[in-house]
Structures are given as structure tokens and as C-alpha cells.
Image (tube, rainbow, N blue to C red; front, side, top):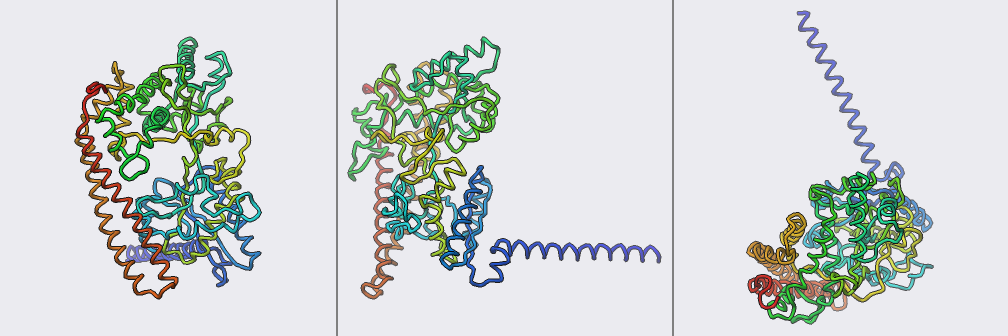
Length: 556
């Protein structure tokens, strides 16, 4: 009997603990709801409007900069007699895509949201901003860009925010980055005997050779060029840079639609003998030469490992984006120099046909933020997005807090940030690699470059080209699958066009609804045309890929 009473009392204690835990979780839930809604002032003041900005930028300075922008915005709106509370939510990048889709599908997303994903996701869940980018940004009054439209205040005239599939602007950029080379000046000067940093590939290779010799002489594990090998990021950066320097003139050889060029058009020129294969694979020779100075086992080295090796003083040069600039400079126990990726000079075989540096204007645009269709306060979300991308505030957030570049015009940089500024004194533009025909094509291109460094073929250009030909069946399958996806989207967009036509027909003449339907119909038609071009380009690409021949045939 006593045992039974003890069991009852013991169970009662657990029940009480369970009740107290339930009460504690309830209180915590209430606190979190109140916090997420904007605090007690917002809960008990029905006149306070609450919006949320969400992103994945966890780098030093970004959240602090957004916090200061929020404080300034709430103060400015209060001066206008508008009660506003802005919340900031930062999600780790690895979990962001899943969180992002859950928020959008659930119907209660943040009001200003950093965008990612396919054009179809953007079109389905985000408000098109095209009607607003031609207006001036009211928060730019009294600044050098006050008379420009919102679109014109951006260094690339907002082209980086254009979604080509739907001919719409779903997002607005908040920062810009370039790729630079970080130099261990102490190691460099000891190994080379000079403070003059390399400007050309010839000078770069010479300094790498001296660094390696210095490592042997001093019994140090010196790595001349540290790379992001695990994700092949460095290979992609180098190949892209030198492909553009050697082939920028092929960026505008023309096509049936009268603009730019496509990979299919370029390969047609190869098959007709107008463009030799050698031109397309010459960048491989440059990358292979530089690859001799990567670390042994570089394919297994990731970004953080390379940064550690750099900070330990064993890496001479490290190539990465300016988003890592201040961690590289501030955390190194030695003086760090910053230079552009050395160009192909005309004093060596690599640069005899080089066009020199390529413009960086408009490149590196990032941090795209959009407004979901489900926002409860669209006008306020749009106003805050304009505030965040205004001339003064964007510099406060990006330049002052993050030490990143602003995507806006008329911004001045000082100190080391002067070296981050994009190249702008040239008309030569970047050109994409003809081998990157899709996700698979890009991955195999990088794998092929990696193998050309590891396996040391006698002729890396021939090796690269013939290996590309060997995987053509897989690449053609990928292009044809992409074409099927384009056609499926075309059918969907054609249905949308029909619905908009009905909307125009039943709307009163000159009504606001009618004008909006007409504008959306015109934009939709532009999207249809661009996708038809893409589908046609894929047909040409497949035809021309099938005709390609082995390296060295037909004078190639």
C-alpha cells in the first residue's frame, strides 16, 4: 500500500513539473510573438505598423548597419507622424533556402526579403517592381543623385536586377563586390627582393617561382597561390578573367536577332573556320601555368582552410571577393596588399593577343531584396526598400559598417577600399565561356581545368578540347532538357497573356486596372520573346555542338 502511495506522489510531482514547463513555454511563446510583432509598444498601439526585413548576410557589420538604418528610418517616419516598427531577421545561409520557401508558401513572409531561387518562384511570390523604378527615390533629396530615377542611381542602371525570363524587376541590389588578390607583403618582399607587386601574368609567375624557391631555401611550406579548391572557386575566377581578356571581341559577333552573341553562334563560327578552336582554349594554358603554383592536394582545400594557411604566413597570394577583404586584412599578423588579378601583358606569349583589362561596371551586384506579394504593408515595404538603397543610407550600411562597396553611383571610397573599385576605364566587356552550357557543363569545365593542372598533359589546350568533345552527349542532353523547360514556361506564359487580354477587354477605357493589365501584358510579351530566343538558341547550340571536330582538324 505504501509503495502505491509513493508512486502516486511521485507521479504527482512529475505532473506539476509538466504543468510548470507548459506555463513557461506559453510565456516564452507570448514573449517571442510580441518581440516578432514589434514589441509591447506595437502590440498595444494599433496605429503602429510593423514590417520585417529578412536576409542571410551574417558577415561582420551587415546586421549592425541594417540596425542603424532601421533606427534612422523609424525616426524619420516618426517626424512625418507615421508610427513604424521594423524588425530584422538574419538566417544562416545553409538553412535560408528552406526557410525562405516555407515563408513564401506559408503566406506570411517578411515584408522585405532577400531573394533567391528560380525566376518562376520570383514571378509567383514577389511583386514586380517595374512600375516604380522609373520614379525618383524621395530619400535621395539633397544628394548628387536626387534628380535621377531610382533605376538610374545604380551603377549598372539596375540591369543586374532584371529577370530576363519574365522581363521584370523583382529585386533591388544593396551591395557590390569585385574579385581581388590579397598579398602577404612580408613573404612577397623576402622572396622577391622587391616591393613592386605584379601587374602582369609574366611578373606574377616570376614572383611565384621565387616564392617557391624561397620556401625550399628556408625550409618553409610556402604556397605561392592559395586557392579555393574544394568548390573550384579560384579556377572559375581565373578562367573567367583570362577568357574575357583574350576573347572579349567575340562578345558581339552578331546573331539573327541582332544583339550580342550566343554560344551556338560562336560554335557556328568555329565550325565554319572563322574562329579557330585555339582561341577558345587559350585561357586553359594560362590557368594551367598558374596552377603549377597551387598547393599539392589543392582540390581538397576549402575557403576557410586557405584563409588559415594565409594567416599562418605560408601563402603568398590569395584570390577572393572583396566581401572577405576586411577579415583578410584585419586578421592577418602581417601587412596585406590588395591588387587586381594580374592581366595578360603584351610582353609574353600569354598576352600577345590580349585586349587588356575588362570593365567591372555592373558586375558583382548582389544582395537583391524584393517585396513578397503577401506583404500586409506594401507601400511601407517599398518605402523602406527605397530608404535602404538611398545614397546616404546605403553608404552608411555598406561602406561604413561592412566595408563593402555600394551599388550606387557617385560614391567615393578611401584608403584600401580604393583598390576595390571596379575597373571602369575600358570599353571591353566580359564574355561567358562557351563550355559552360548549363550546370553540368560548368561543373565539367572546372573539373577539366583541375585535371589539366593535376595530370600535367603535354598540351593542356588539346587535352581540354578533346575531353570536352568526349562528354558532348551529356551536355547535349542537358541543353535539350533546358529547352523543354523553356517550352513549358512558354505555354504557361501564353496562358497568362490570354488572361491579361481578357482583363484589358473587360476594364473601363483609361482605367487604372486597364493600364496595369496592359503594362503586365507588354512585359509578359517581352518575356515570351526572350524565351523564344533562348529556345531557338538552344536548337542552334545542339546542332553546332554535334559538328565540332577534334583539336587540330580543319586548321583549328
